[in-house]
Image 1 (cartoon, helix red, strand yellow):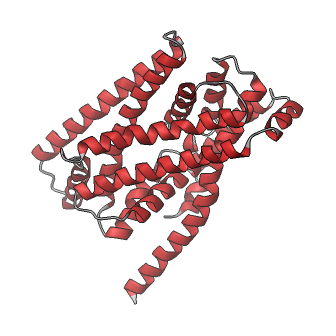
Image 2 (spheres, one colour; image 1 turned 60 degrees about the vertical axis):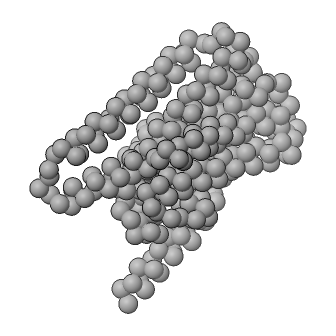
Length: 322
């Protein structure tokens, strides 16, 4: 994949300008001295627990994707599933429009010689499970955390989340029905659509309960990331509000305007924390620690992993030609 070309793309540059504009607006409101004091007093042990929760959630989601693949007779070990999943997150952190999801299909093709559209089909159905688990966990955590008095904006957002899920499920059924009825003259396009449909059907009754359980566990564990950041900064906020804050922020990364929701997530997280009466500097401290894990660490370790994996892909291509 030509990542350099995507980074220098006009759309990517504009998205980063939007991101940095929002972040600059947030930065103008902080008291730097107070922020430094808050961060200096952070408990490193809880911060590392937050990192552990975040990466454990990625491992669980990678294992779930491995099950999806096995359901369509693609055998990928957990190590490779984790690497490919992680690299898709890395690409999504650098370019907008969720191109990392397509990149996951590309890497799967390089590893298993299966089509990109087949891999992308599994990613699409995986996203539906993600949304269902996130919306349910968001509602439960918001209901308990806000003691039944959920802010109107949050209820409105969750309603839209339910609408999106229903639309996605409806689109899947419509696509499958139409794809089986329409005969295309273009064989290549027909093959792509058939492979995509096969990926969408990566659900089997015997593995469905495990996939559902892993979806909820994976997102709940990721939700603990912000809770342990609360503990790190000695903030008296409950675990379910931590889960709610994390999942609400993660949900916004799905917006394809900026890479990994950069700027949008930052603004939304500070707004959410203010709902519990947290002051601006403490909110920004939470934001710094959270994004150091959910964004900066992905970019840093992802860059190293990308360099290694792309190097291996090039070597394999040269070996095939020779």
